[in-house]
Image (tube, rainbow, N blue to C red; front, side, top):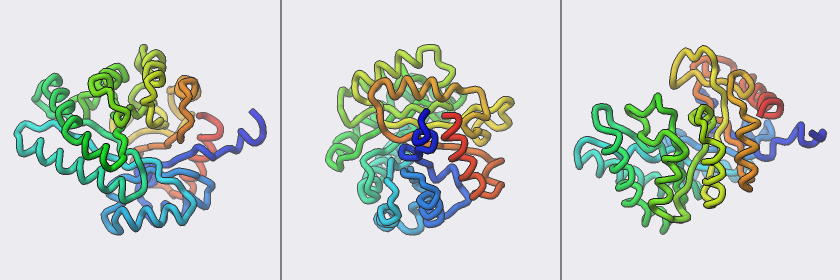
Amino acid sequence: MTASELNDLSRLCIHTITTKPWAIEVAIEKYAAAGVKGITIWRQWLEEKGPVEVGKMVRESGLEVVSLCRGGFFPATDKAGRQAAIDDNRLVIDEAAALGTDLVVLVCGAVPGQTLAESRKQIQDGIGTILDHARAAGIRLAIEPLHPMYADERSAINTMKQANDFCDLFQDPMIGVAVDVYHLWWDPDLKQEIQRCGKADRLFAFHICDWLTPTKDLLNDRGLMGDGCIDIREIRGWVENTGFNGFNEVEIFSDSWWQKDQDQFLESIKKAYLNDS
């Protein structure tokens, strides 16, 4: 790498959930001061000030709003629950438009005790129902496949193949995929499915962190890039070989890091990003 490449933060994005203790105005200020260029907003950070004001703050800081997390969670055991999910996803789309991003990430959902086949059918129906609303608002929808350990209640979409197959069902440029290494690193078909995704021009987002060994908590014990067993550089290479030139989004759920000094954590993120991803 050249000296400039070794210090290149131009494609670094951080999710607000990563520095969970920081209020939105603090996260915006700290990210911008650190040279980070992108921010993905989680919806709870919109609650106090609203999407219009948050979007204005982000733009004034020089950051780019990369996406809004998260929509989805379509399956439910009753019609009222499924309709509530549809209504909430329409609201997410409106929030994204007001915020100033064109991308919503979908964690598609699942229901304990309901078959995966039924949950997947409800996901398909849900996305199909909100698609016109998303298209009218100019908001793309990124299906994020989650690790199979979350198939019980977080997502019935668990592989890149399933995400690609869903996109094939719709054949719509507003529907694509978010690739998260934490959820997909184990998949023996990952390279070919990333290539398939790229050929269809539907690779919308790329999320990075690392898988720690041992993992103490299956949700909130993710690691900094380079601290675990994922070959992030290899996967990033596959992603970039498709022509993807978007942000590398650091998304770390970590009870351990959330309890530490967040300024030091931010510096550790930058160092790990430059050295190990």
